[in-house]
View (cartoon, one colour):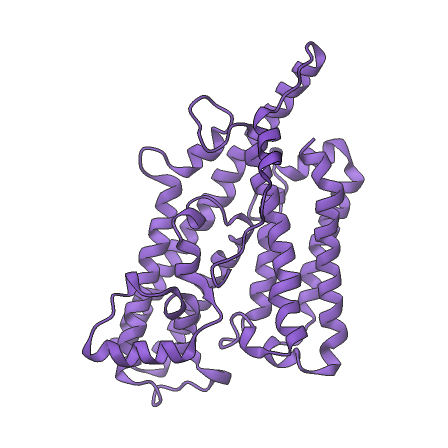
Length: 362
């Protein structure tokens, strides 16, 4: 997710130039080896686009549409059952989004869909002012600033602080704005999905055609695989050193993502699952024959096993932190578990960066 819309790894110009040039000046067996690697990379990219990215965004758009419908039903009939259903729809929508955060590149970045859906921390004062103003001067949510829309504005309206929101405490203005927010969320997720699947040049085709003539985004298959790899490293760094360590070190619960729904730790686990999905090339925990995992295993089976173990250990380490994280980060009894999770995830990040990168990007 976005921390004030800034969350990308910088890739140096010199490295990109090196990748764009690619290949070897030698001939014979070196050329054949390069072609073989490029064929493997193209298969990895095609599998990744079609088996991971597209179904994840399909799921996100479908669940966001269901959240919009649940909110509309709640607006028409404010019962506890309808409020609970809208909350459940928010949590269900959250899963595919958090499981997409290991591939926050392409249209989700270039078209600004990430901050429109998931900017944080939430500006509570501005949100309250926007809701009040919306009664007399309707807000165009589609063009509203990102810190008063998206997942966390919806979350706050549904739960409030410390899950204190009740039907009785929800104002007509809040209810109206909730409806508008969920409508806009469904609009954005549909655009995101369609950017990968529709139009003259869907991004799935751009990614899978890396290195082909006319592809002005990816001059080589290796440059596209590097984008995949950098995104995996980036999400491991963000979970350990921003999402968990940031609010923990500052002892600031206002910096905790998904703090109102108490869904923070599930978010973090889903982020590491997203990394796993990129590495495996599937959504179900099996390893695709065309995947970064298979590529690494063919060259260093022990290293691949270390990565798989690191992913499993990271998810497990997050899982033993007491929820809600907004409270446990201030609990001395929880500190060893939080420290262990940070260390475990950073170990995975270091393994990827120092040992796996030279294998995947020779």
